[in-house]
Image 1 (cartoon, rainbow, N blue to C red):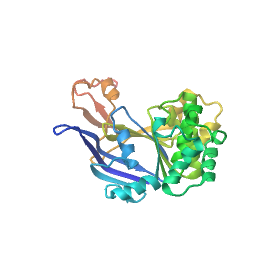
Image 2 (image 1 turned 30 degrees about the vertical axis):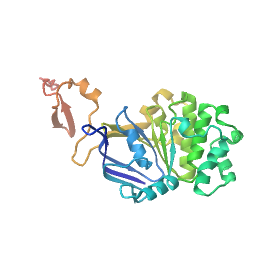
Image 3 (image 1 turned 90 degrees about the vertical axis):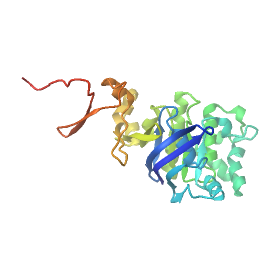
Image 4 (image 1 turned 120 degrees about the horizontal axis):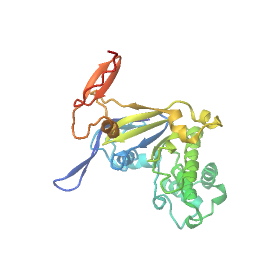
Length: 302
């Protein structure tokens, strides 16, 4: 569904200053996958989402979605891509909804812009995300969670194959966030739509197939599911606080040159704070990273 190879994005601040938001990012997303993207502020995750949505163009590299090279699309083709292929959900509901329209009218609006108005389809989408009873409600009559569910229905109005969400649960409480993630999961299963969600909440990623961590504009690690979501929900004795540890395993990502990004807290734990050098040792089939200024502890019996 999505192929990013050596993706670079540079923002020009002024004539003398530039910011490199993505620094050669590599990423693959399979058709029908539900994937999360995590990372600290400024890591490049929202920049990536904007480019996947056609809201911004890469500076260099390769970005192919549904066999279409987004770097080579004309402005007219890019508009068509945004209208037909991708649905976008923002964290700020003001960007998702028109306040003086009802819920059903908000869902109808993208259809009208495309020239394919179907009220029955709008009602069907609202029923699908559990908002059939609020179709005639306006924005000020809906809670934050209800507004976000309407936003999801809007994003589906033109039958996109790719659904992108930027912190969709950032403005709601934990219980409501859990409900919204369940909606995404059901849409992913029932409609087969590919879902990519940017989030900072690691508790929510337990419902995703795969989580990609971005650090300094590059993919640094992937967190993969050990067991499928239905199995997790059927385990009545599961301790919620241990869900992430029990169901996921994290892998470091190697780039084409064999480089990996080591988390800062890992380096701090072995005393690498003011140096850019590590001792790399191959021992017993393992690669060990050591502080070169520390004497290794001799664990062999004398």
